[in-house]
Image (cartoon, chains in turn orange, brown, purple, blue):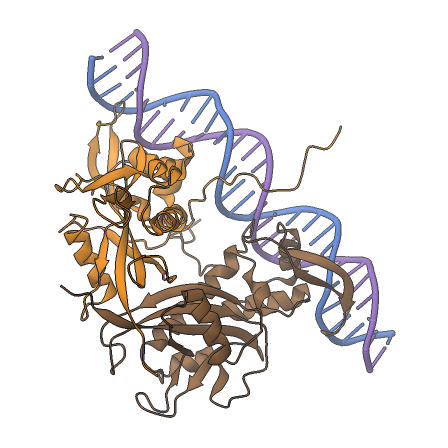
Length: 234
Length: 234
DNA sequence: GCAAAAGTGTTTCCTTTACACCCATGT
DNA sequence: ACATGGGTGTAAAGGAAACACTTTTGC
């Protein structure tokens, strides 16, 4: 028996926080299939190319984000037979978290708020599913990793970091308790000797990312409320 | 330019708890490459086959676990160019968690304790790396999901479940507090009206898996101890 | 001075931990 | 009777949430 060979792509879910919205980098399609839909930036991998290398190359070539240090991690692989009507394609999705960068110079590539992308399904292929998986991964990662800082510029204030959490999770957080938690977490933030007043009010200390790879203790997002108790009658 | 086409495989990390050890299902290789090494069960995907379908098929064909309800989830995808010396192969790894089952009838497929597999590197390809990733995923999943029960038979006691946690994490747990936590977690366990004395002592209630997909509150594994404090002088 | 945002202290509540103690079986 | 493991009660310790209050800037 012969071994079937398939086309393999890497697709990129690149997220950022801009204008108070969680946004993703999308490609506006101007031809079939899925003309006038959006798709994730991506492309075929080369025969001699490792997967993370392909992801970095496509980040430059198709997302227009060359020479930018962006956190990139593998998300998942999608391969059901009819996901691309032209041919069988297995796609390895990567998740990228970026600070608020200018979009690519190409008009075809733009940042778009994720609510707009996910509410009306104008997505090509199964890219809405992939985007949703990437968003959920990002939300979960903020709890146990210091990756919220990947959405921030190299130096940032605690309040800016808090706004990242609030926007990605869609939940308000207490500024005082948040401050204590993140400054107390082990090697999450390293203070600089500089401050800024760019957010108004009293000058805020600027921080840089620390060396932590996981957060101890974690920053748990408020849960909807899960216990079976109700208020007992008096 | 033409689209490169690659061979795509699914490889299986199937874990179980047997004889007080976390064990994986491995294939004993009797030919080149990597003759006399172990490899993970797996195989090429078919052209018209979805990835989870291929994983289920290979679980039956190559792992010898047909008609067994085993939790299967995608682990990660491995694709660096030289991982298979014969040809470029991209491999989508799946993680399976199984109760203590008899091994396949085929002598080539057997359960092996993971410490033995990972300590001396007699692994084919990058299968040691894949196995380690699968083990870490399983350890992490026990915290936030009810998947520990996937290692147990359909009906099990709290103590049997606790032994799963202890063996997978390699940590002793307080039986009393463990009992309270798992029986208190929302829809983790549903009590039956039956008991067993198969572990000796007072009869223990038998439970079945509940409908929960995540654990609230989570079962956090004891952390090594991370704070920077030391004992201050009096 | 006043508004605005940063940051600290304190109280309350709740979860987790440690462990004493009782329970129900096999031998 | 007594050994063995199952299961409950409870007090102490630790962490999170709520929020009053102080600090430091811009205007």
